[in-house]
Length: 248
Image (cartoon, rainbow, N blue to C red; front, side, top):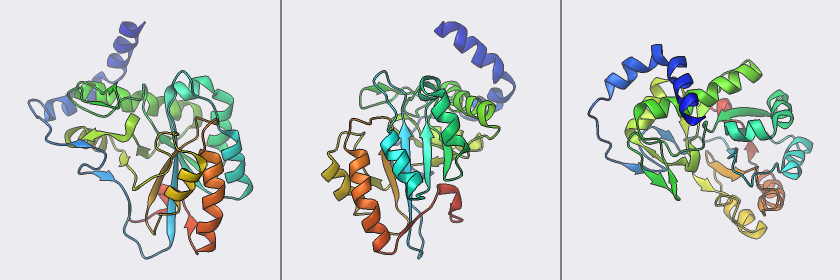
């Protein structure tokens, strides 16, 4: 099945892949991490705006944190949702509901939730894409799925684990996407308690991008955000989607 899938993906992107692959023949990346050149980690702004981003990774134990989403909807809190193809397959009805809600914009979280590398670097035990071709397949595979379902191609991409090398970031940019990182680690992969989430999110300042997760309803993420967001609003901050920031 995997071989057939790769063949189909290769045929799908055969016209576009060649020139990009040729551009990076023999290139060896120098950097690996969450904040390499080309990744948008935060924006410089005098406005008191914060960007909440939520990942849905698509693993075997993934769920849907409806309590968190209901809280955002009830309180009209915008967010950018980075959704993986496997999560879409697992929650197709919920995905379409989220995509149709104007509070949210859908970001691309990859086809198989892989770190973004041109030579197979790993992060948190997850092996990354191993070539420029695989970077393109990981990004475009999910972008095509999202576009087919919603009629809109995503503007932003965040890799699985949010790890990148600088060459892979250039490839993604050449494909026409902006690469979104983060400046506030809100829930540490949905492992934080609600108190830890609240404490982390309350460190947010103007221009920060918060990274949390919407795929683990059993975690402390929802309760922590429910506690922190009203406090930030009381401090004069407002929440916006990534696409609302002209500085990006």
